[in-house]
Image (cartoon, rainbow, N blue to C red; front, side, top):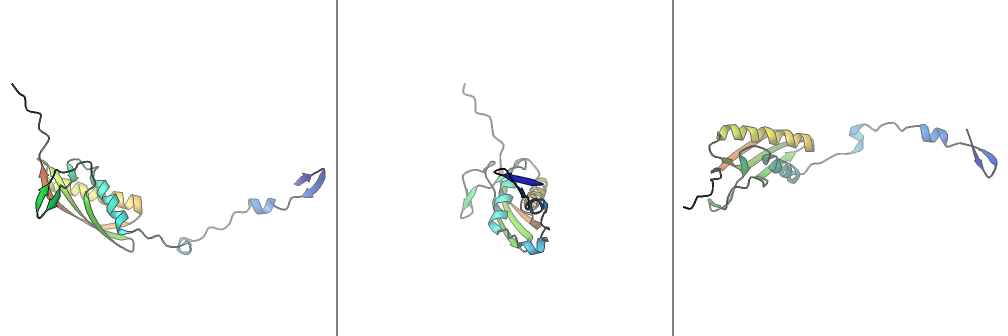
Length: 144
C-alpha cells in the first residue's frame, strides 16, 4: 500500500509494525501484586453489611457498649495476609432473635467470597466474635 505526500508516492513501511501484536508476557515475568492487610480488612468489614441481621458491633470501652450496633457501618475486622492467603477476624452484633450460629456462618461465607472475588486473596479461615445482640426496632409508644 502506498501513502501519498504532496503528490508523490511513498512506500508505507509502518503497515507491518502496526499489524504485529507483541507476544504476551507470562504472568510470572510481569511482576508481583501484593494486597495489604488493610485492604482485606476494608473489604471484609464492608461484606458484613450485606448479611441480614448482622451489624457492626457497638463501640466498647472497658467491656461496656458505648452506643448502638451500626447495621450500615463496616464491622471491626482484623486480617493477616501472608502470600495470597488471608486469616480474618470479625467482631459483629446479631439482631435478636436470629440464630447466632446461622448469622456467623453467613458472615463467614460472605467475607470469604467477597475478599476472594475482589482482591484475589484466598481466605483460609474467618473467626467471628459476636459481641452484642441487638433488639429489633420497637414501634414508637402511643400516647393516650
